[in-house]
Each structure stands twice: as C-alpha cells, then as structure tokens.
Length: 230
Ligand code: GDD
Ligand code: MN
Image 1 (tube, rainbow, N blue to C red):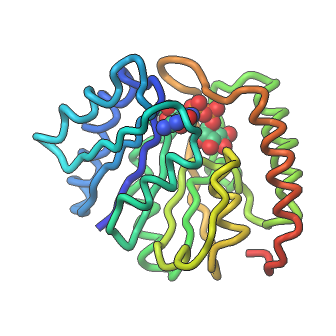
Image 2 (cartoon, protein in one colour):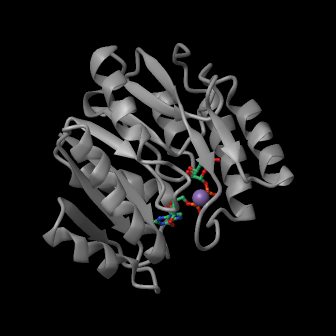
Image 3 (cartoon, rainbow, N blue to C red):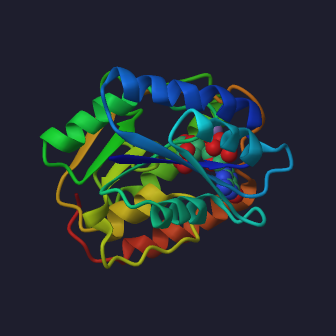
C-alpha cells in the first residue's frame, strides 16, 4: 500500500481534478493506494472539496488550523499514514500522476530507498517556468551539492520507504523536505525517474522570498551533517 501525501493551501480547483487522476493511475496499474491531503485551513475550501471524494476513493483529509508550511504538512502526512511506502506530490498539476506507477515500480524492483521524480535526468524537463525561477532553482541546486549528488534533490515529487525514516529526526523548518530526507535518512540507494514538471495550472505559487533565506540556512546547516553522499 502506497500513501500519497498531498499538501495543500488554496488548491481547490487543482485538487478536484487531481484526485480522480491519481486514482485513475492507481487503478490502471492495479496498485493499492490512498491519498492523504494535508490542508492548512485553506480559505477557498480545499479541505471540503477533497473530502467530498472520500465516498468514491480512498482519500483522507488532515486539517491543520492555519498555514504552517509545506514541510511540516508533509511530515504530518507521514505520521497519519500506516503504509510502508510514502509518496509526496504537489496539488497544482506540476507533477503528473502518470509518473506514480513508474516511480513505484522502481521503488519495488530496484531496492531503492528513495525514488525521485526528477527534472534533471535525461527525459526530464521543466515546462513553463520563467527565467528567474530557473535561475533561483540553479542556485538552490548548487547549495545542495555538498549534501548529495542526486540530480534533483529539490524535487517536490518523490517516494520513500518508511523504514528509511525510522528513528530519524527531520527538522520541519525548511521548505525542502526531500533534501532533509536525503541528508538525514537511512538512505543507501536513490533512483531518479524522469518527469516533465509543468508550471501550476490554477492559483499562485506559495513560495515566498522568505523561503529563500530559509533555504540558505537550511542547506548550509545540512552541509555539516556528516553522512556519506547518496
Ligand atoms: N498544507 C500546506 N501548507 N501546503 C502548502 C503550504 C503550506 O504552508 N505551502 C505550499 N503548500 C502546498 C501547495 O498547495 C502545493 O500543493 C504544494 O505545497 C507546492 O506549493 P507551490 O506553491 O506550488 O510550490 P512551488 O511550485 O513554488 O514549489 C514546488 O516546486 C519546487 C521545485 O522547484 C515544490 O514542490 C517545492 O517543494 C519544489 O522544491
Ligand atoms: Mn507549484
């Protein structure tokens, strides 16, 4: 069983389209899975919209009282899940659920602890990002170099085995939860599966300038975690 964690803040229109798509993929691939939406009391009613699907699909909504950040939402999703396999993806259609079965196969067959939906391996791409967003992404990637050799350590689309996180204390402050997992988790093998990242469909990015400084502190802090690079 795979738990698909989707953090949301004001993603009503997006989540309404995404949930049926995700289950369409699971069904077609004959996979058993659930969706856990972690919503921060979105004023647009995202939580209710998602919960309405629980009659048709294996969907749960975790409601938090206010906007508390992406990483802590993901960790809350991990806590609410009982599955050995965890997946994280964005609600805004940047991550095509078509990749889920492909990624899961790699997680199962190749003994990987982490599988990344990667924009930076052959076959992967970013579509529709303005120049400045690409530039920031390049800079952010450079800061991650001392921590890991993977090509897309900042992807928001990944799978991880729960056992790789057992006994590991993750710092929920940063936006970049995957980087934190790669730095601190019991990770022996990482695989990257190409994805085509698309700019969001509806609404605005929640990434604020403050996140940049957060990330700077976060990544430099992680440089000191003494772990062999995976
Ligand atoms: N619950 C909750 N609380 N969800 C949040 C919050 C929050 O405070 N902030 C953002 N989210 C949700 C959004 O609703 C969306 O589903 C997902 O997290 C990603 O947020 P975006 O605002 O779309 O982020 P982005 O597109 O700028 O960044 C994405 O791409 C980056 C790759 O360049 C994320 O996936 C990043 O993790 C990733 O590094
Ligand atoms: Mn986005």
